[in-house]
Image 1 (cartoon, one colour):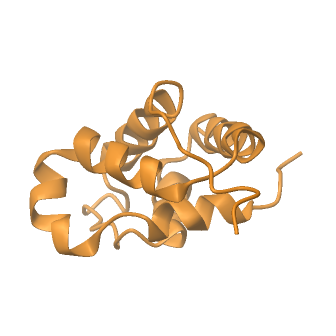
Image 2 (tube, rainbow, N blue to C red; image 1 turned 30 degrees about the horizontal axis):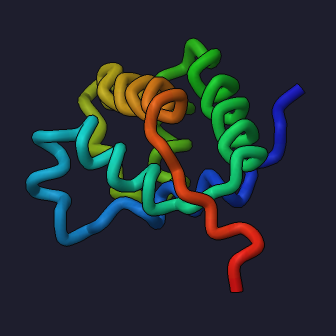
Length: 112
């Protein structure tokens, strides 16, 4: 059973600094680390985000994975003639998923 898209998925997408995009596409792991840190998600939301990314990555359908990238809102994936990104988006999601285990996120939960 698929899980509903959690709000933290969209928070992550909105945390990629658009002004850094030209640099970020060439330095994706660093750009992703920056975005993850900027989410300020509490630990339970990080766990939820990891589970959702695991669900996305479990799909054998690269077209679905590309559509989820576009839904996240970082930028639009440019598709090849085959109708998908050729695995680039899957690799980006894998990078993000791996970084969620190592990047320290300072939660703003409970702060006012």
